[in-house]
Length: 299
Image (cartoon, rainbow, N blue to C red; front, side, top):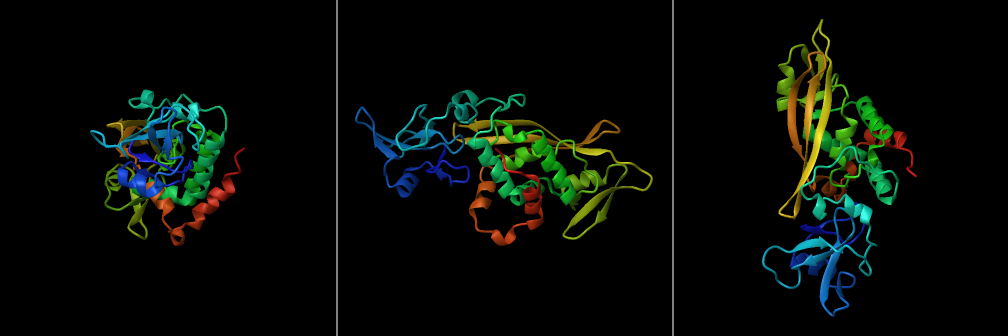
């Protein structure tokens, strides 16, 4: 892996594994540098995905190739206790590097990690919606996002074991938006999705403000269009960067046709960068109110 953390929190900042970053951030202080029982100096951090201890290779002693991190597989003094369950679903785990997440595999217990991601969704709901809408070039109504959130909660999709703070906006859409109606939602004029929909039989757009148009049916026609997501996959490129993606579709259930499809590649940094910036003046209270009203405390 190419990033490490110094705090075991979902919202903690990620740092690139380089000699400069390691020295600048840790000052080589304990517990990030320790003498092993064999008298060897070793450098440590926290996995940015599963929050387990990792050993940092090449940040003090030069190596051939790029410095990297690897899971310790055991407890390290001063760092979070090793958690095998979290490691099991870490994309950087050796067994998972070329594995497709299994959608039939779900967590059965609500632990502190599940609660932390649930609370992150609640606290950052407006920013999560912003990322989805920007990615898909559309804007959902308040009623639409209430339905999406309720579907996500009713089906307990927060127990999806491959959920992380990085993919939270995308996985929320993946489960919550699937089978939601396209009718009455707004799309960015001139975008690929708008151009595809506007040329489809029975579709009409009503131009609204800010370069968006609302999808309605033409007079005398009936639209039966729905969103759909499948194939959440990831791979670890060169053992460093996570490349996650999913397929997005719009289906006409009347004809059985898929009229739009797109592969969406997740950004590894976009969501966390938004959280760590002070943009409190840009928060959308109407969306935050939806989360506050519909998301009771998880226990």
